[in-house]
Amino acid sequence: MNSIPTITLNNGVAMPQIGFGVFQVPNDETEQAVLAALAAGYRSIDTAAVYGNEEGVGRALAASGLPREELFITSKAWIADLGREETLAAYETSLAKLGLDYLDLYLIHWPAPATDAYLESWKALEELLAAGRVRAIGVSNFLPEHLEKIVALGGSIPAVNQVEIHPALQQHDIQAANAEHGIATEAWSPLAQGAGLNDSAVLDAAASHGRTPAQVVLRWHLQQGRISIPKSVTPARMAENLNILDFELTGAQMAGIDALERDGRTGPHPATFNG
Image (cartoon, rainbow, N blue to C red; front, side):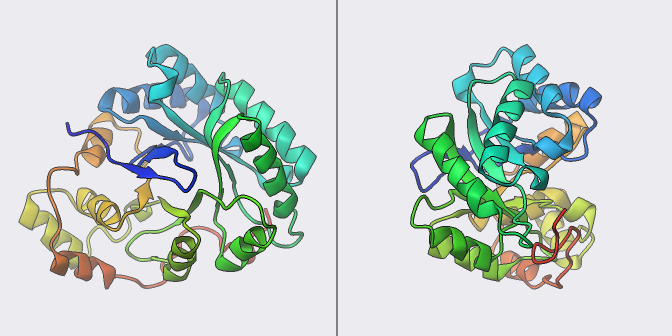
């Protein structure tokens, strides 16, 4: 298998462009799922405090025997932990559950704009970055107006904005704002939990290349320069999702998938979600 390409974040840190997500994986199943993902070749693992499975991720990392420097581990501060002191404490809790000395990427999970407390959390993340406790900091589910408030603080710019993106929901405004500020776009739910994989543009491209619809959509993300974190608990599917590096979609196939935009959001809207 070809090595996974990386994206160089705006602070110079290299992040694998394809990672493994553990959203909704029960803690007691997470260790085996992550071990299988690592065996398949993944080195970037994405979890979050609210997923309740950081301990399972930590057990897998310890059992894998892989050198820490080969891994890229992301976690996120939940809405209940917004605020400077709360976020600093949440980071220490996540780190302890994961059994790690540092994280590669730490994100504010949602802006929860009712209070704008994420601005104080951002200052906490900057402190962690300055102290060498985390290699890169970023946000998740942030709209352009939330990004602008962070930029207006005059400090660090988020390295990553992790948002829901798939063919049915492409969030061009967020991607444009990310690009304007040099923020990498990371797609959560890159396959929309299977929705849209039966669209003719995807099926035709899959038939053309002898690939699965999921591989085609993940390749579409890759060719557009996004980071993606597909999730599966099936080892064969994990390997399949990673095996997208040896073919290329044509311009017409990319355009066909681009045309599938239909505001098909599957998660909450960041403008109104406050936990």
